[in-house]
Length: 232
Image 1 (cartoon, rainbow, N blue to C red):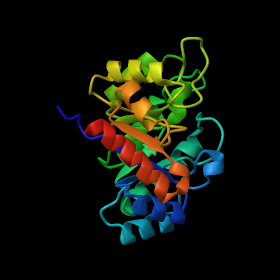
Image 2 (image 1 turned 180 degrees about the horizontal axis):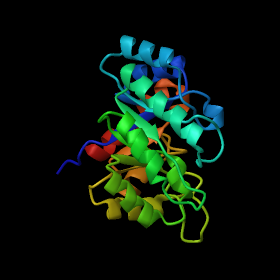
Image 3 (image 1 turned 90 degrees about the vertical axis):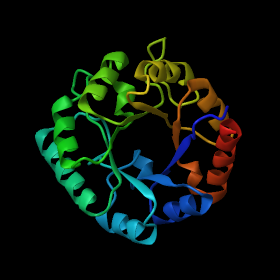
C-alpha cells in the first residue's frame, strides 16, 4: 500500500533561492528574508514578483517584525497585523506567524488578530512553538484556534532541553504527530536535508517537512528523491 504524499516546503530567503527551489521541483515555499536572523517578513515587492513569475507556486509568507524572542508588544502586533493584510493582497497562499506570552504560553489574542487579518488563508504557527513551556497544552490551543500546521523541531525534549534540529527532536515530533491525530499538521523543520529527510519522515510519521535545502536546486531534487522512496 502506498503512503500518502509527503510535502516538502522549501524555506526561501530571497529571489535567487526561490528560483533554485522551483528549478529543483518544489511546489511550496516559505518566503522570508534575512535568514541569518532566522527569517523576517519579506517585502511585498518580492512576493508580487514571485507570484507573477510562478503563478502555481504555493507561497507561505513568514510574518515576523524583528529578530529575537516571540513576545510582542501592542505596536508590534499591530505592525504584523498590517503586514498580513498586505501580503494577502499581494498573493500569499498562506501565512506563517507565531507569538508567545512572557510566561511561555501561546499568545492567543495576537494569534486571533493575525488569523482574522489572514482572511481565511491557512495559518502555520512557526518555531516559536519550540519555546512553549507546555507543548501538549499549546498544541491543543492551536487546534482550537484553527491553526493548520505547526513548524517545529519538536520543542522540549524529555530532559527539558529544546531540540536544536528536527533530527534531534524525532521522539518529541512523533509524540506531537500522535497527539495531533490529523487535526493539525506537524511539520518537522531545522536541519532537514537529503541525508536525514528519510529518517525524519519515517521516525516521526510526519506528512510534511521543511528545509532551506541550502538554497540549491540539486539539494531540493535530492530531498524530493528521498521522499519518493518512502511514498513508493
